[in-house]
Length: 298
Image (spheres, rainbow, N blue to C red):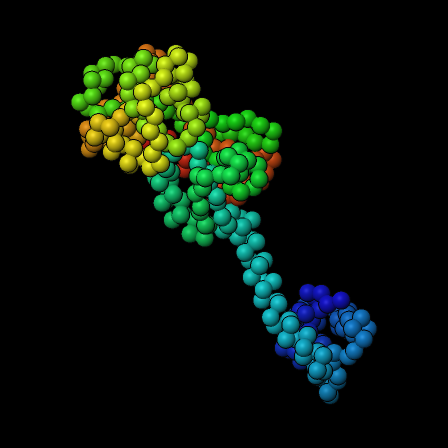
């Protein structure tokens, strides 16, 4: 059976012409090289070389094998270089799963510098999962999950990145805008605008309205943060978002962040990973960038 070392031997002898020179380049004795050639010819049942004076000349079969060596050996070399770069963490792919819609704005502050530092790392951001973010992480569809609501299951671990306050955002002329904080009953006559996520996973409902037995007048779902904020700014409803995101847009859009309840609702953004899995260097750098960007979220 042909092996890589056979291809290397054939290519080297053809390039140098003699066993002596080939053995020297391959760091082998001439007898060891001759033995390898004879063993290969026995396995193939046909001669590869014939002697032509002091030099060796390839037979027709030998030239077929040389042609194979010329095609395959560069592929081996390229693959080894690629694997080495992956091993050192300078090349590969990073698939990020998002369970935090407004965190795209935060992620943009990381993606640019990350891609500049790792030009040979492909990056993909996924939001729609067939079986949810946890299922995508466990199923190896993504490499890291960004989530404010970690689900602790066997095989996963989470790294806290930064804390933030979840606030109600209203138009600056809204009657609630003058209050220091809002109570659940304040939303009973409001159109609450959220991302397209089931209500049980939305803090404005699960941690605020539902425990108080309050039902909102209307619930509207909008997928993009920009349109959601424009709806609030135009007085079409209210929404619950991270304070850092609201304050970033507050002056331009004429909106106001309000504390949810007297004590407020505080959350943490986490990065989820599979346990006991070797992380490439570029993933460690992504984590450091994520932690270093926490200042923009406060």
